[in-house]
Length: 222
Image (cartoon, one colour):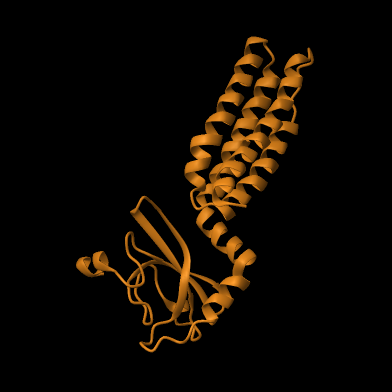
């Protein structure tokens, strides 16, 4: 699947999952019966969780895509259902719509808050074999630096570039490293180091710095 297809398809799937769950509320609004239902909130929690996790794995821009595209659609739909139930004087339907909204926002907030950690370990679980082969296939650097490859790179038209490296550390010296900090074998100070498994770490550099250039950190005396 191409990057463009991922960015378009996955947010659309999240929106559809949310709207499908919310649609069940309209069936109750059509009915004269006024009763509380957990079906829509539960469906929305499950749908949001599954598809948002998929988006976190495949896209580093999940927060932007999700907040700008999906959240407004689902929130406006929930509010519309809430108003409709209130106009028809169905308090339990109002509560169902409110629970749906709260469930959606709660799950979304929890997953987005931990997206960095979730994304790192999920990507490692899926693609670790190919990344390991790429790094271990490199000759050992003569300058004492650790073997590495780009783990993730983000930015917009060369602005605010963020680079994360996958680093092979046979001595596990990075296990004792503090974030932010410095470590032998890595030329630049780093913002965050995360242990993926024994000997393997992701190292997040400061903005607009990479393995060969760290001008801002040097100027700041980090």
